[in-house]
Amino acid sequence: MRLVIARCTIDYTGRVTAHLPEAVRLIMVKADGTLAVHSDGNASKPLNWMVAPNVISSFDDRWEVTNNKGERLVITISEVLEDVTHVLGDDPGLQKDGVEAHLQDLLAHRPWVLEEGLTLIRREYPTDIGPVDLLCQDVEGNIVAVEVKRRGEIDGVEQLTRYLDRLGKDPRLGPLRGMLVAQAITPQARVLAESRRIEAVEVDYDGLRDIEDTELRLFDLR
Image (cartoon, rainbow, N blue to C red; front, side, top):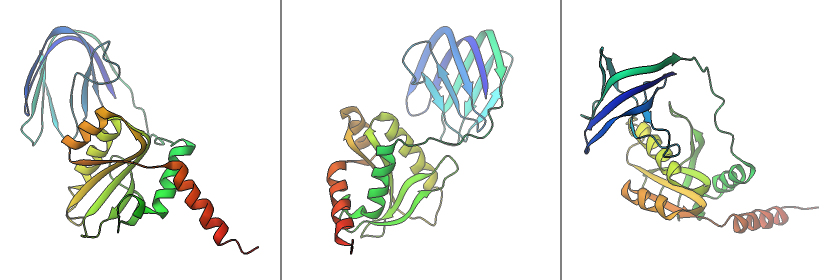
C-alpha cells in the first residue's frame, strides 16, 4: 500500500463533475490499484475514489486515474509532504461476530424465509475481492447474492455493490440480484440500496432461533 500526504487539488469527471480546491490530503493506493483520497475529517469515507481495475499515470505535477467506464480523476500536486509504501501481506479477512455468523448459518439452512422459493447454491461464494455470504437462486432462475449483517448500514450496501460488480463479470451466472439482510437496516442504507436496485430485508433473529430450536426438538429422539 502506498500512502502519500500532499497538498493538491482534485478534479473528477464521469458520472458527475466534481472539483476539490487545494488542501493537504491523504492519497491511498492499494495493491490492486484502488485509489482513495481522504481528508482529516469526514470519518472513514473518502472524498474521492476509483476502485480497481483502473490505470494510474504519474507525472511530475499530477496523477491521472482512468478506467474503462470513462471516469477520470486528476490529482494535481503542488507539494508532497510524505510518500511511503508498505507491503501489508495477506489479510485473514473479516471475522463475523457471533450473532452475524449465526444469522448467516440460520439463513443458509432456511433461505426461503427471505423469499418464497429461494434456494441456496453455496455459502461464502468466492470472488477476487472476498466471499459473498450466500449465493442463492430464485424461482425464476435468477442468481441472488445475499450479504448478511447484524446491522445494515451504508458500508454493507457498498460492499454488496462491489460483489455484484465482480459477479456480473462471470457470464455463467446470468441475471443477478442483490439482497442486503440484517436485523435492522438504517434509513440511509435503504435509500442507497434502492438506488442500486438492491433489496433491503430485515429478519427476526430471535424468531429464526425459535425455528431452529423447534426443529432440534422435533428430531431429538431421546
